[in-house]
Image (cartoon, rainbow, N blue to C red; front, side, top):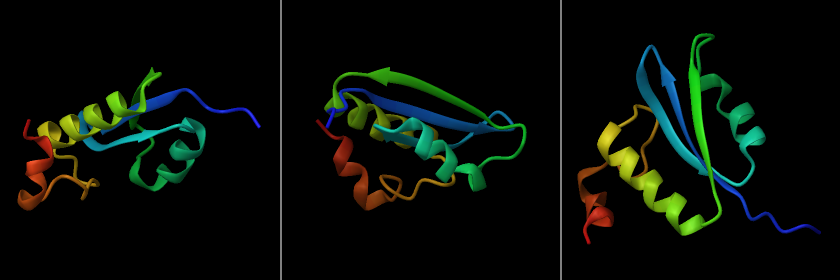
Length: 85
């Protein structure tokens, strides 16, 4: 079995507003699963990384900054301690 060493950070934008930020090692499956979050005009931006920890930190960062409507993880006030150094 081949070990996956690629991780993706992806942002879904609908009408120029970020509606979801996520990370995955299987981008094709995640895009299919998120189809209900996207209109026909939605855009998905993604970047590949080799370090999972880096992707997780970036995911938290962008969720905190952009506050996408479909992200519940890391958006609640009591969860912001996850971002403190």
